[in-house]
Every structure is written in structure tokens, then in C-alpha cells.
Length: 423
RNA sequence: GGCAGGUUGCCCGAGUGGCCAAAGGGAGCGGACUGUAAAUCCGCCGGCUCAGCCUACGUUGGUUCGAACCCAACACCUGCCA
Image (tube, rainbow, N blue to C red; front, side, top):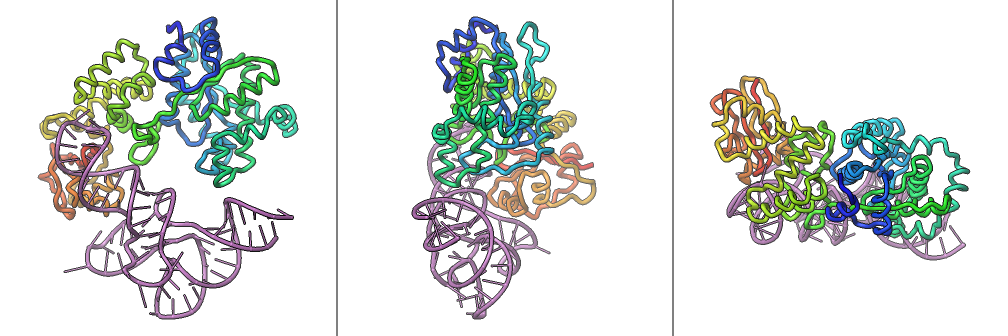
């Protein structure tokens, strides 16, 4: 157990902003506390961007505190203002189905049977928001909010200056603040954590609690993960990296972390793994001395994939990655190893007989988005079959080209590999 | 409600009758280098039955041999006024 959780978070680079850090540290040093973080159901799954919050809840729990994971069944129906523009409202039944899926995902990261007072709990703000009347919201909650201050919030200000903002989204802050108030009353919850973009919403809750109850509670935000060029972290091949294996396969998930750029390895190891300081510092040293070994990326990918997909899947995708990206010839792998590796990677099955044109196979395996893109890849010298560069877009593989009589290994560029199994 | 401006490809943005699948930038992709990294350089970057054709510049209709560009109506956005 970590004796000083706040100190540990600071070392890990997980504190972007907080209310009085001395008081916060003291608060968590002197007893088992309850904290929460909220997750709005805006999609059927959480993605890697949410991971930081979930794992930070877990760190608090491992330090003996009680985490509440809130799913925004109510706030998800409203939508937190984004600078980019008004969100599209989703139908309540759809949001409800997302709530269920996200509850399941959250539950795998926290311990619900913990001893003492540290057992985690899942809560849904729809439970207390649904029954609230308009009068209650406006009189009991709204009266404590200054529109002047709400307008100062970055996302709101940006929207006012550009596309405008609906009353619906403008009201979001009231609901989130009320969540904090509710959890403070029900569970003596005294800390809310979130991404640094949530600072305004969280401190609004802190203020509300003080005004309504006189109570003093805390706020802590984690830095948003960004790449070295300032780009948003967590996108892969144009899409989000999801935690749901049906949306992002464990193989792709593992590959995402393996491809982490060197400069991000130290901060990610600290932020998303549970290794201790000595170990992380050793890995960092090794990564800077012998970066080509990618030991930091490997540790990172292994740990995060294990957290999200479990030990077994991690072992499978590690073996697959080692086979597909190993130095040896793919054809020298035995049939079982190759088959297992290609099954983890994206793959398609085609019937024996005359095989499709290679451009069609590139599309079928989603290595290329269209036939034009596939032809382009071949023209540019970026497409390979069985590690041999293709030169003819009209090429059609024959029986002789199959490895072990039934496999074709397709590759686009250096990293994207897919299998074709002839059955 | 009135007046003005705007709506272009994944994003930003130029284009105001034929030379426009549409400048430039970003993102993305490939190649070279390397380490499944970053940076850099080069190339690509709507689709297809690919020397051609089809879709596309808010929507619908019109003018024209020909429209992203002109006209009309509608929708939405922004600003100013009420």
C-alpha cells in the first residue's frame, strides 16, 4: 500500500491541477476517504483516453480509499459542451445500453470486495437526476450558479465565440455539480477527479457543496495525454483505441502501445502502469541507452494490455507480435505458430480454388480502404505478400504462393499485417 | 422580425462560368533512413470495370453548349439592428 497517494500521483505526473495540494494530501493521509470520477456514455465503449481516470481511481483504492465510478446515465443524455460544436442527442434507450456496457468495463478495473471501507461502487447519476423536478433544479441548484462564471468556462466561451451553444449543454455543469453534492451527502465523497478539461465542472461542484452544506471538498485533475507534437493521444489509424475487444482487437490494442514514440514512454509508464519507481526508472534508463530494444514500449504494452484484456490474451498477442515482427522468415515458423499469430492479427478466410486478386485481398483484410488505395499502395511499393514486395496490382496468388498450404501473409507498409486463410 | 455575410474534399481554407477531382496547409498513407520510435527528405492522398468513366463544392430547381462559380426558393450558421 502506498502511504502517501498524493505524493505518488505527483511523482507519476498525474496531477494537473488540484485544490490546495497540502490540504488534499493531509486529507488522504489521515483516513480512508471516498472519491469519484464520472464517465459519460457517449459511445458503446470506453477508450484509452478514459484509462487514466479509471486507473487513478484504482491507485486510490490500492492506497486504501473507496472509489465510486459514476456512469452518466443522466449527463450522457445532455452532453458536456465541446469546443468543436453542439453534440447530437442520442435516444435514451441507446444511452441506457451504453451505460450497461460501460458499467461492465469499469467494474473490471476496481475491486468490489475490498476489505474495510475501500470497496468500490458503481453509481449512475440517472438514479437521482431523473426524479428531480424542474423547480428543484432551478431553485435548489440553479440559484447557486452565476451565469457570469459559467460563461467563463473555456468550452462555453469558445462556443459563444463560434457556433453558439444550446441551453441544454449550457446546463450540463449544474448536473455534474449536483452529482458531486449528491455523492458528498450519500457517501461522504470528498474528492472528484477527472481530466484537466473537467476542472471547471469539478470546482463548480466544490463551490456548490460549500454553498449548500458548508462542507469542504477537493478537486484533482489529471493531465490530458498528448503526443509530442501536441496531437490528441489515443487515435490509431484514424479511429479511437477502444477498450472493447469487439471494437479494437487485443492485437491492435497491444500494437498501439508497442508503437508508442520514445519520448512518451517515461510518462506513460508512470501514468498507466502500476510498476514502482525503481522498476520504472530502470526501464527508462534501458530505453534511453538502448532504445532499439523498445523495452519500455514492451513493458508498457504488456502491462496495459493485461489490465484491459487479461493475461491470456496478452500472452497470445505477444506471441503473435513476436512471430510477425521477428527477425526470422515467416515461412520458417511452424504451421501452428504462424496460424496462431495470423489469427490474432486481422484476417479473412477465402475458399480454396481460384483465389481473389491481391487488390481485393488487401481490401478484404482492411489493409486498404478501397481498391484504389490498394493499387496505390502497390504502385508505391508499400504492399507485400509473404514479405515479398508486390509490383503488379493485377496479380492473383496461386496455390504455390500459400505458406504451409493455406496461409497468405499480407502486409502494408511496415506495421500493418493481415492473414488470409484458404479453407 | 429586419439587414449583412457565410455553407467547398477527413479538418482548416483558396477558388467566383470552360485550363477544377478543385491551390495551399494540417491530418493520414507509402518509400528512403532507423528501431514496429521521433525528426528529415521524396512520393501519394474521392471512387471504379482506371490513358476512360462516375460521384463531389449546404438542399432543390433553373439559366447555359458548359456551373463549385450566375439566378430562384429553402435549410442551417455567424454578425449587426429590433
